[in-house]
Image (cartoon, rainbow, N blue to C red; front, side, top):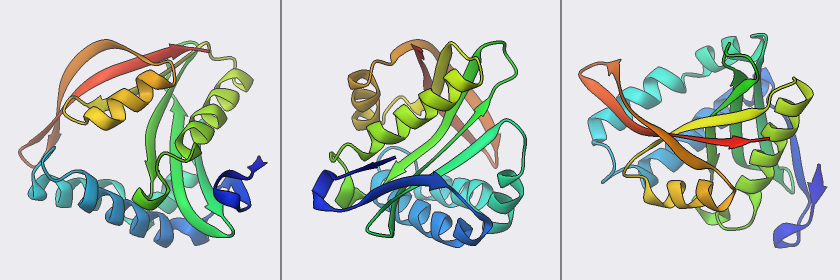
Amino acid sequence: MTGKPMGGRVRISAVEARDTEAIAALANYVWRRHYPGIITPAQIDYMLTQRYNPDSLREQLGLPGNWWDKLTVRGELVAFSNYFLTGSPGEMKLDKLYVHQEHQRTGYGGMLIERARQVAREQGCTRLILAVNKNNTKAVASYKKHGFAVVDSVVKDIGGGFVMDDYIMAIDI
């Protein structure tokens, strides 16, 4: 998929093992700028360590029913997403979607959502879901703009004394 937002070449492609360090670095950058005030610094550290260790990311790349995409602009990594089949018939979960702050509001997040929807359709899914922190008002508004609706509210223990207090949002595809 290519386009010309911001006047440069935009490309969405599969994350490869060689990309995991860059994915981890982008996650660290985005999380440390976006999540203070939404979750504690200790929870940010815990979740980054838990979810964005390059070795763990490399292991996830080969899992069946699990996709990782990167979005580059003129060869520079500016966003990534991860989505997977949930095991519930017809359902895929958009698990991660992060765009570098300097590239937000450019349409890149929407491009990654559309790519996840496309793969979901190819896999025979009829619904795409996601979980988003209830206090992450910018993300909630963005997902609503893209057609998602809140369908549930959950609190999930993630270990380390931390919980995720999320909305579950969904869109039919």
